[in-house]
Length: 399
Image 1 (spheres, one colour):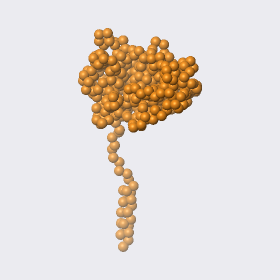
Image 2 (image 1 turned 60 degrees about the vertical axis):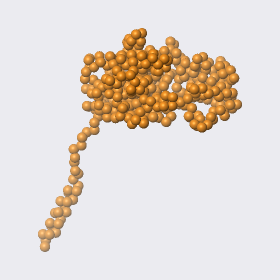
Image 3 (image 1 turned 90 degrees about the vertical axis):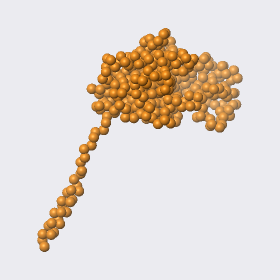
Image 4 (image 1 turned 180 degrees about the vertical axis):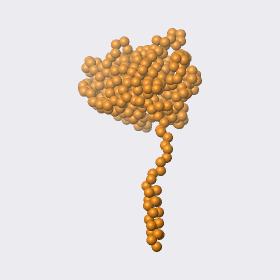
């Protein structure tokens, strides 16, 4: 009679011990990756007239636009960001200082564009070298429209990558001429990359940015025939980075050598974007963990001091060129053109400030069925933003 209770007790203890022992299963370590992105940020200009460049014809970005740009870059969460349409390194460094997660390394090389729009890079990894090709002949009397800067980044002690930032010739002008120029640029980049492969065959290559043409274009065949189009995995309905005549098309890409496997890629469509292009990104598998350099959090952009000016006082307005102002005046006419809408403050509009709302921003001011801006005629309005100059006309561009 005494044996049974002992037997029951032993079984209970053994069962309890079994229940408390965790089941250990071998888990594979996560595959290390690096995220690389590119974005044409649309005229990231400063508030200073740069001698020798036609920058006074491009309105600087307002503080509100810079703030939106910084928020979008932070949300992108990338390790490397190639940028196009940046005026100089100083304005890029200033933007970087106001990111929640600033990049440790910022570089930009001045290119050939007469307005001064250049290609640059922000990286969490050391930049070992950068090679400019702005003086490289790529055809009869042709050079790169901007440049093709090629950066060598050190991702880890035993891992590097070549990253090229692309901004090919736009389609402005005669089609035959712009196509021939882009094709020459593509052939030039192909020759550069072939030479890089000969010198450094074990280092992967990524090129990214604004190609100003579609993936099936003959002008881009030299590049798409050499490198893998990483962004081709994006859903067909989302494969657009730019709106042209109301239709979305993809002209921004990330291309990579076949020895750099991509885990995924994407195109970011922002609801209220500070640019007319969408960021593109790709995440690549790496054989070893990457070693980024971290910086403390940046500072938020402060509101500038905006002098109050009358929209009809040209002398006072000219003194504030490229600066943020608080302008006010009575609207006498709303002029509509293909490029956008202009608010005029005098019948002779050349004798006053003009407020310009580009076509791609018009939806933020009017509904699709309405023309609410027409109701501003004979009303006094106040506007904040940087004052620019286009073809001798003082203007304030609203987005």
